[in-house]
Amino acid sequence: MTDDQSPRRDSARGADQAYTALGYLISGMLIWGFVGWLVDRWLDLGGIATAIGVVMGVALGVYLVVKRLGA
Amino acid sequence: MVRGLAAEVPWPPSVDDFFLPPIAGPDNWFTKFTLFVWVAVAITIIFFLVAYRNPKLVPTKSQWIAESAYGFVRDGIAKDIIGAEGIKFAPYLASLFLFIAFNNLWGIIPGVQLSPNTHIAFPAFLAIISYVLFIWVGVKRFGFAKYIKNQLIPPGAPAWLLPLVIPLEFASTFLFRPLTLALRLFANMFAGHVILLVFTLGGFVLLGSDNFALAGISIVSWAIAIVMTIFELLVALLQAYVFVLLTSVYVQTSIAEEH
Image 1 (cartoon, one colour):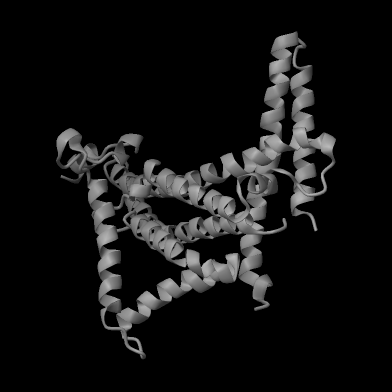
Image 2 (image 1 turned 90 degrees about the vertical axis):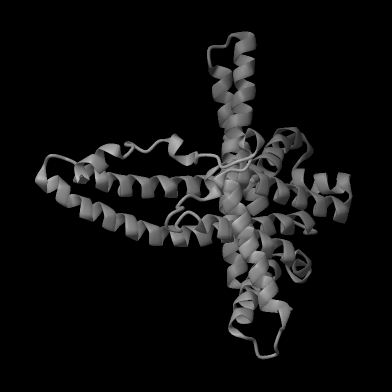
């Protein structure tokens, strides 16, 4: 059985990969943005830590997309 | 008389339109949705029993329908996505597909036109079953520690990065998967019902208006309602397909050796 790469399987993978990539990017922003927000509240930094957290979260999300889904 | 009818129409559509009057039982546990689900399940069971009661080598018409429905899920989804092992998941996937498809179809059956899946409880419970399934097969295959490691640690990531990415992997696999499964089905069925309500009831509201030209447009509104009903038929089957497809993708990633 060498039909592992049948077209339907590929398109199903594609749909799943789209949701996975979206999930990584959004969860990156939410989780590390939230941590940054907590740090903001704690040290009273006026939003700098939230911004750093969100940007770092996106960067990690992109990293995971490349790592997990990249060729 | 038409004016009177238009005045009776509840407008605009609201969430209250999704709650049908209860039928019977203590605390009214037996609702119309209970009835719809039972009828959908009964139709499925009876149809498959009848179709397979006396199987022929050259299938009869009902046997052919039953075989193609099951064969579609077994070969087109289970075997295609999961591989040769997928066959053992085919009974669950086929039941899931038919259950969702038949319950979705209530959304366009004249006289009912409201699917049980417009209430989050049904999609949520189906998502929980699939969630438990894909975790269970992964844990059974690799053991708990190895399975969690497979899912949470991207291969080849430097150690200092792990504390940063593991929360993301956890959220995307163990939180977003069940949530999106449930919400996708629920939102599609909910939105479909709202669309049908808007165009059907909107036709009555237009008909009841004082402006003659606006009253004529009600025909257009009802025509769109009919087109949208046909579109909802497509959505009902497509969402059942997507739900089953993603369930099998999740099972496949749980038991895959390498990512």
